[in-house]
Image (cartoon, rainbow, N blue to C red; front, side, top):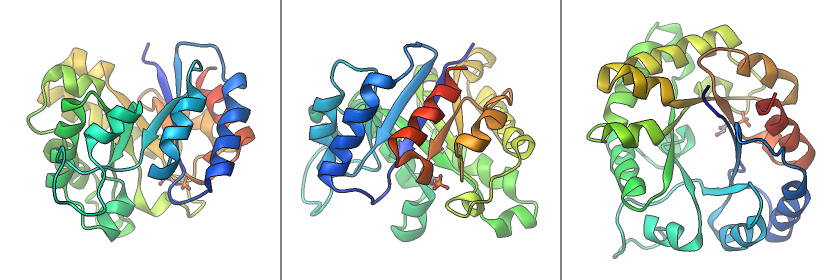
Length: 252
Ligand code: 13P
């Protein structure tokens, strides 16, 4: 059975003390279950403190973005080597907000995914369609292009350790969740593409999350779907109680 991965994406929220308090209040209460993994993806300035506070617990700490180069003249950017050095384990790559507001493309996503693996970081690669694409019946072709280009040139082993997050853009922060059947249909399709790119075994190992208005009230139904292996959660990951309920749902 594939493990479940519940990742909070705090986006540009919280201050350092709030972020520290969050970790202090969840680490002791996380389910002791190897089949569920809990990750908090926090803004860069909080990462060193969060990594220290999460030490000795099962909570993993991730970043929300990074540059693909190791170092150099890239003012304002953060490198994968820096994240690794801090003890960060995961990094969100190609979130739709980065694609929309910071001009990220499938090609830059691909460079970042390679850079993540070169530094021993696990990428959480985001894909998802707009409402216009869904209404024009372009969801599957769009997702296929994002997956194929995003994962291009990776080894089978790297693909099997990648986490893919399917986040329909129209469901992010809107309160509209894709129906669990619709979400699963796209996740199944992603697994089929990965099978074509690698093998049935690798595709079966791949963790695919759903994201978009996930909350304690709807996570059970989503996780019951055969191809949904977890969630990437924005708003409902900001409060410790709600985050813990989401992780507990993954341990059921
Ligand atoms: P919400 O859970 O707030 O809809 O955000 C989803 C998301 O973008 C997670 O990366």
